[in-house]
Amino acid sequence: MGLRDRLEAGDVLFTAWSGVPDTIIVELLALQGFDAVTLDMQHGAHHEESVVRCIPGIHAAKKPAIVRIPVGRFDMASRALDFGADAVIGPMINSLDDARRFAAAMKYPPLGERSWGPTFGLPRRGGTMADWLGQSNQRTLSFAMVETRAALAVADGILDTPGIDGIFLGPADFSIAWTNGGSVNPRNEEMMGAVEDIARRTRAKGKFAAIYLSDPADTAKLAGWGFQLFAFGQEVQLFARGAEAILGPARAALKPA
Image 1: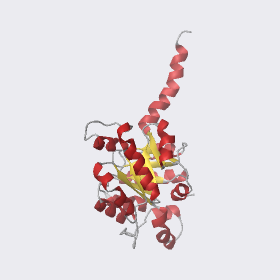
Image 2: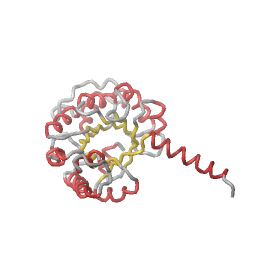
Image 3: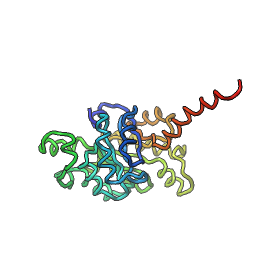
Image 4: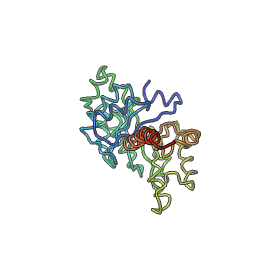
């Protein structure tokens, strides 16, 4: 089943969040228990070359490849899809014009303005050009990030934009906006009502709700609100926790009884 199929079936999915532009590390990440792998070009170190080279390792593990593009790089959304990405996250979609431009880059006509040229994606997936053209608009997903008060104010309009498949909430930036620059706290209780409202409005419009998961303990609560796709597990966190899981017991074993 593809990413859209699983979300439409009601599955709750977890995507690893990769910021290290190395094919071997991404391949190893894809072999873990995550349902997908996201390559982060905004705050991570991924770039065009690493995206085109890392996607095959994700697909080899039979996982969807998701790419978060840099702010405003809607041209990269099309390129990520041409490389074989299954979904693209567009950060800082703060206006209806942002949403329209993002959607236009994600979808072929008549829904959007995506240019033809799946040089890498088509041979990697197989099938015919007619299959690719006929299926891509439905198969690939566009997630517009809501991270600011401006985006919150036009969230319904973003969701109503043809070619936008879902909302990805960025809780860290949203918390900065919520406190008018006062603090960064992805779990700020004062904004949780707005977070829940965004999820419910997204699902009510038949779209998919995704969020960066700051604490796994919040999974059940957020899933209950309607979020289905959870992103977490950056390499630096996984390495640190994995190392501690091994070193902790080893050091403890050396302590006198």
